[in-house]
Image (cartoon, rainbow, N blue to C red; front, side, top):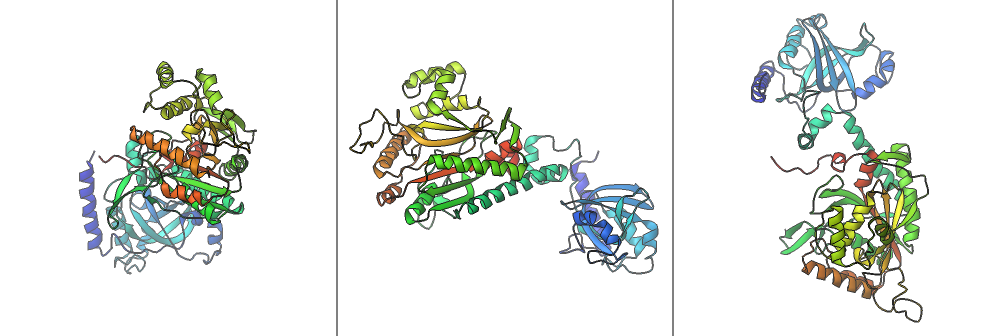
Length: 523
């Protein structure tokens, strides 16, 4: 079996053969009347002179050679252009009719028999070619094109992987994704569905009266999530900046204060953290913000959105994925954050000490990063969520894990004259107006009644700053300018976001599998 370098050397020699014959191995354009999908779908009409072509009129097709069968006087070539496949038939007798004449379509200056021979000498599986001829059916009834002339569209120097033996290594598949798409055409359908997924999302939000906006991807301080950001340097301003970790949460809230009542954005976010089947460092999210609405309004809208996505993109609301079965058409349960952890682990995260939580995690065999109360609480919840099939909404989160959400009134806190909290709630015991859709043991979105009290927000930022100083890389940065905006007043609002993880769960794939080009460590 020849090595890749030997194959490349042989194909380089074939390029010289093409050039010597007067054929450009990499022309800027080749004859092509329509795609192969249309050729097959409208074959009958073309045969009778429909769709802009007279019956028997020559047509040109183009695509990659995926198979070459036969030898000698007749060759059968399967072309694939990504949208469809079509068979091209090369008959020596047909090319012989052109002997003595220079082929015009091939633009090579060769007569028919010379052009037929050149195909056998210079074309390999993997090459892109253009063929010109007439439609016909083979004796076996296969819709085909009887080739009169051909020309190279792009000569391959390296072979395609073998159908059953190539690209078996998962990392190699992701690293050479283009080959993965060629050899596994069904994979393309996933990304067509993913494109539709975001199209349906955009259409849904606009029909609900939301304005699509664009917010900065480079920020002086990151906000809207708890994650380690990617850091870079702005040369002109000579200051450090960060790639955003949310789709403009703090910017869209500024728009709420400015009088925009409903906004949304679909865009890329970046988080400098670990990889897993549900996590990547770069991914697409959608976030919306809705003035004069609260988290209960948000849950109603999100239920409708998720059902719409399921029905329009996947044609069903019933899914079996990631080891769970659920139906989005069912009533969505409400799961209490603290009570669910207590039920599954017998730990009350509002009362237990850090030592008690660490002991429980050790007992459960769960690894945890960070030893502060927030990280331990979050890790206990993540252990519990894997047992929930859904659909459900997780509610009543401790304020500690949601620094941007409005608190639910704490019965134990001191009240003002109007029954409101007279000072920021204790983040250990207070709960917030937050909701997270849960399906197949995972969180697939996050929303809340947005915190618009500047005093409370400043106090929560101060707590996050203390976590950062204590070494928590995922704690949220303080944003004084955002607090200043709140001091000018922002109306009550509901905010919500979800990412392509939701699509991955619907498709029963890992997050990396539904990314066209996931980040890979260089070889």
